Length: 80
Image (cartoon, rainbow, N blue to C red; front, side, top):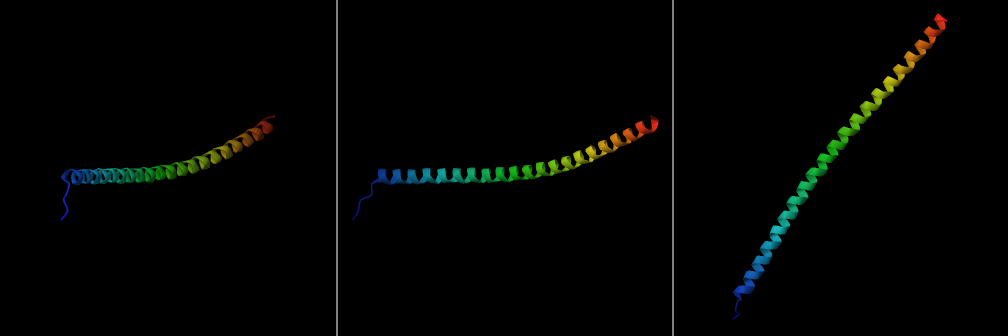
């Protein structure tokens, strides 16, 4: 027959409970970080799209400016 040490058994149970709580906290933290990473990826994709749009608009504006400058040159030649 073996004797059970109630203090030792309680200490083991407390250690098990502490480990379980730590594991749950780590799981929650991991899940939160996964959500944050997914959110950051969505933001990054949105910023890339916005950057692409702005670059296109800039090209259009530069082309329009060049056209206006050419027209001004032609007008100046006609007036002179």
